[in-house]
Structures are given as C-alpha cells and as structure tokens.
Image (cartoon, rainbow, N blue to C red):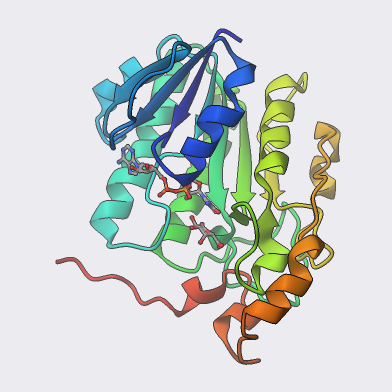
Length: 265
Ligand code: NAI
Ligand code: 15L
C-alpha cells in the first residue's frame, strides 16, 4: 500500500491512529474539518468537510485504503448528524467507487445496537436497535457499506466499536472496552486478509464480561489480545456502581438510551 487515508484524523481516535498506523503505508493522507496541526514528513494534510462531494472526491483520489473515522461521534441535532454521518458517508462511498474501490474500515458504533439489553449476546446477524439519531446514522453507514459491496464489490470492514480508549472509565466499559492495540491489529488484518468482503465486527477486546460474538468473522483470523480485567479492581474501588435500574446497567448502549432527540436551534 502506497497511501492510506485516515478521515477524522484530528479527533480522539484519529490522533491516536495517526501515530499507530504510520507503519502501514509510506504516505498517510490525513483529513478533518478541524485543524490537523503540522504535517510530518510522511503526511499529507487535507482540511475539508465530508459533506463537500467534490472535496471528498479529491481526498480519496490516489488512496489505496481508507480508515473512516470522520463524523459526529455522539448524539446531536439531526442537521449535524446528517451533514457528517449521512452526506459524508454517501460522498465517501461514491468517491471510493470512482477511485478504484480502496478497502474501507468504517467506524460504526455499538449505538447501532444500543437498545439491546446487556443480558443478550449479539452476533453479526443481530437486528439493529439504534439508541438515537447518532445510532441511526451508523446503521445508515453500515447499509451503505453493504449495498456498495453487493452492487459494486467495494470491500469494507464494518467495525461496531464499543469504547476505544486507553482504559475503561465506567462499569459498562468493562464489557465494551476496545484497546487501541486491538483496534490497530484489526485494521492491519482487514487490510491484509486476501478476501475481506463486508463483515460486521464487534470492536471489543477479549473482555471477560462480553455481550458480543465475533464467530461469524473468524475467517478474518483476528483475535483481540487485551482484557479489561486488568482495570477491574481499580475501577470497582474508584467509580461508584450505578443503580441496578440505570440505563448504563440495562442497555448495551448505556446512557445514550437516556438521551432525548436533540431539537434544532
Ligand atoms: P471524535 O469526535 O473525537 O473525532 C471525529 C472527528 O471527525 C473530529 O475530529 C471531527 O472534526 C471530524 N468530523 C466531524 N464531522 C466532520 C465533517 N462533516 N467533515 C470532516 N470531519 C468531520 O470521535 P472519535 O472518538 O475519535 O471517534 C472516531 C469515529 O469512531 C467516529 O466515527 C465515532 O462515531 C466512531 N466511534 C468511536 C468510539 C470511541 O470509543 N471513540 C466508539 C464507537 C464509534
Ligand atoms: C461511541 O459511539 C462514542 O463515539 C464514544 O464517544 C463512546 O461514547 C462510545 O460510543 C461508548 O459507547 O462508550
């Protein structure tokens, strides 16, 4: 691979991946609507809005693979979600189709299935149960990936990310935690497996508490290595246990299920 595109590169995960994925290609093309700072010798910086089709077309041209992290990452009013996660995904997939169909990692979210109870165990065939407009937009993105695969053969790894950060900070995250190292190894695998297809993969580490079953994507040969247990004792001692009827204890999407629909200004 010559050039890897990372969208949302100024964001939390984007910043992390800017360092951690640099070994995958000699050139990293980094994009965001926000400022990306100074370019390192191996970096091309492109500041653009994902809702700008022409800009996204230029952005994708010449890229051999895409890690699509750009978009609104929490619940918000519809106009914001639509611009970033609906128009943005449409523009990205059209640009990819026109420019040789580079493999895409699509950062979906557990909020696509957030209204499932924590007592359920889900695999890739589970019904989507989004827990807000943000979750609905991720279901839309997953559908775009699926349709572009069936119609054009565009390959995408749809990753329903749980909670990707250095360490879990809530009790719920003992189940949803996805270590950055495990995310990196999944991306590496998705770009090197001979046939990727368009799998749905739950982005979680090998946590002892788990609601998700990735057996349908065993063909990828990816195994998470980390386990949130190493943080369990500290978390139990330092973070108060939520009430048994709290959304964070009942639903896989946790507190997102308690959000209202955000009105427009
Ligand atoms: P973030 O909010 O820190 O980063 C998202 C980036 O996308 C921001 O830098 C933002 O400026 C950019 N962006 C938003 N709208 C844009 C637009 N219209 N045009 C261009 N750039 C735009 O979010 P984070 O945590 O880094 O997440 C990255 C991706 O992973 C998001 O798509 C999020 O939904 C998904 N995800 C993240 C999880 C996590 O644990 N961090 C969990 C589940 C999903
Ligand atoms: C997400 O989809 C969000 O982008 C992230 O900020 C976390 O809140 C995560 O889900 C989560 O459910 O913990």
